[in-house]
Length: 256
Ligand code: IPE
Ligand code: IPE
Ligand code: MG
Image (cartoon, rainbow, N blue to C red; front, side):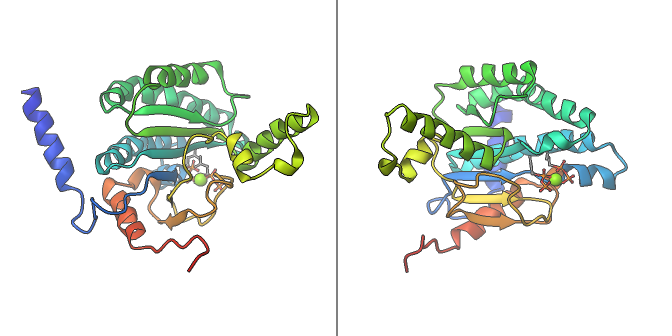
C-alpha cells in the first residue's frame, strides 16, 4: 500500500516537470532564494504576520522537493537576515522557533532523500534552542551525499565579508599570510560558503528588486530572477518556470 502510494507520488511529481524544462541540459547546480512576502501574504488575509511565515514553511518543503527532483545540488534559503532583528520581538521569537518546527516534521523525509542540512550565518545572538535544532540536523545529515540544503540564518553578506577580513587580517598580523598573496580565492576560503560553489540562479519573490544584503560576494555572476508572487503562494511550477528561463540565458562572465 505504502509502496503504491510512493510510486503514485513520484509519478505525479515527474509529470509536474514542464516539457520545456530540459532535464538533460543546464540544470543550475546552486539555486539561492530570497523567500520574501510572507508578511504581505498574511496581511492580505487579515492574519498575523507569523501566519505568513508558517505558510512559507510549506513552500520551502515543496520547492526543496522540486529542486531535488531535477538534480539541483545546492539550495540556499534566506531565512533571517542580520537586519531582521529590527522586527518586533514576537515575530523574531517566532522565526527563531521555525527551524525546530520545520526539522521536527521534515528531517526524516530529508534524510530519506539523502539531503544534507547546513546553516550559513553568524551564530552570535541566536537562541540556544535554534542553534541546537540546526546543529542536530547538521550532524545527522553530515555524510549525506544528495542535495545540500543551506539555511541562511542571521546571515548578512557584509557581515560575512567583514568576518573573513578579520581572519585574514589576523593571519597577516601573525606573519602567516603575505598581504601580497591575498587573492579572491583566499577571501572565498573564509566565507560561510568556502566549500559551496557560487549560486547559478537567484530567485526573489514578492516583487522587491533588491538583494537585501544576501550573498554579496557569491552573487557576482549569478543569474537573477524576480517574481511578484509572494513566497507562500510560490509553487513548484513557479520554480520550474525560473529554471526554464535560466536555461534560456547566455552566461558570458565578461567574455564574448
Ligand atoms: C520574508 O517575508 C521572511 C523573512 C524576512 C523572515 P517578510 O516577513 O519579509 O514578508 P514581507 O516582505 O513583510 O511581506
Ligand atoms: C530579506 O527580506 C530577508 C529574508 C528573506 C530573510 P526582507 O523582507 O528582510 O528585506 P527588505 O527589508 O524588504 O529589503
Ligand atoms: Mg520582506
